[in-house]
Length: 313
Image 1 (cartoon, rainbow, N blue to C red):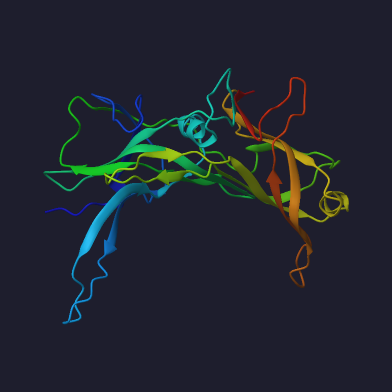
Image 2 (image 1 turned 60 degrees about the vertical axis):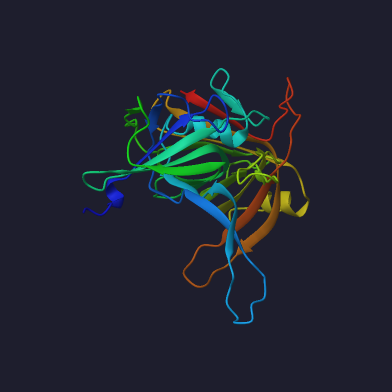
């Protein structure tokens, strides 16, 4: 018997045409990832009956769902499908904005265990959240969270399944791979040491009487927020915070022409933070939290909270 090795795990996915149903003879796409916590979550309740001998009488299965997610290093085109699911939007002319569309997937983990491999499948999965960490001298990294309907194990592939090799595009970094930072109302632009973007669409499981399965997965608000750590140079960004003045944010990641992304948040507010002195022999940093809100600015109006453009030159 051979034990499964994490370095040999395959994580693959396929878009579902009918949410909650894996397509027949699926053409899986292998996914680039740094770790995963996809979990088949069996939900149980312990009986509260009182026994004279003091023992627990039973534990009952009452439902199941998929939770967890996966970590990644950002690379071009790898996560375009998952960004659609996250923003509940659809790419149009290489532009994606938050909307109310649904994009579900089946994920499959393959563990090499010798003569017979182990396959673990997670069906009816939506991307519930994602964060990006952009830090000086580091690779741009992220984590995605998942909420799904059901799961199962197998010892063989689905009949007729194929697997497309993951792409080899370069991972993106926060040095030469980060450009065109623009916070509205700040000029000249700040020099930052790091920033994060956190996006969640507040998915919720819709439970039902009469079945272990979820009746569905509900969509909530698309919530876009983040943090920024900048060197203290002047009072501009502190003024935006103190006066509760609306700002905006845009930046580009990537180094290869037509293989870059531009993120644009047209309206945000700095919600908290200040200039902080950690101690001797340190830089004074402005550590701020920001929150995006719906924008109807522009002509035509934005009508969204976040916009991602791909294939940027």
